[in-house]
Image (tube, rainbow, N blue to C red):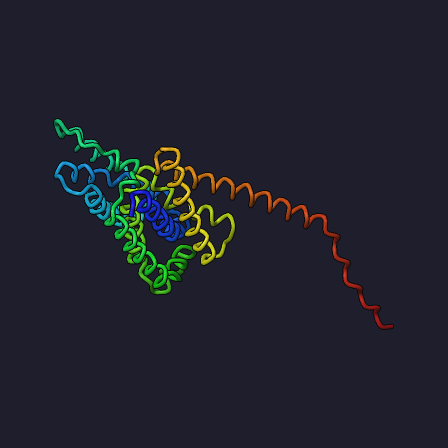
Length: 284
């Protein structure tokens, strides 16, 4: 298998996995959390680079700590989830900057982590994406109804006897796992498009969660496939190409659905009003 073949397969697998989890991210209003996690793992990357170990393993382990910190802060009565995420994002990234500046002579190139290099992925990366995809599928199949219940009725979910903290932990750790395997392909900066864009596209076409999930998976796979083909043909960055394709797909879907809704509205207005039902003659 050539490097291009591996890149195409990686893009399709990652697009499907990212599309599947992106629906839960959008339903739970977690795009900001996803963006924060791609940046808050930076200290783990710096520590891994200094120690000479795998960058993605370091970022993933530190990401788990960030997830636990976010959940701990968000459980406090006066602490909103968005505030907790913001605190962890700024603190995590600041720690990475401090570690990087305190290391004299540090010259490790972190470009691969920040922007991604999908053409250099190996068999291990494909196995990692497949394994995380199996975890995502197991979560959706085993707890899909609970996740939807938690998203649409948080109070009712807790009143029904479920444990929101465990559900949130499972979902956030799964999102972090997808982020870790998305980094080699799209990078820490651009991987948020893989994890949010497909669901944003799907939500324009349907409000059914199963249909939304299917459309998101297809949109993610198509964006990855087309993005890699553009990258190899025009010799441009693959992560940027995939992100631009996702953005183009969202913009075209938004334009198409807006036009369709406008035509449907005009059609309904042109329909003649139904005749009122005839009133029976009162008996004399």
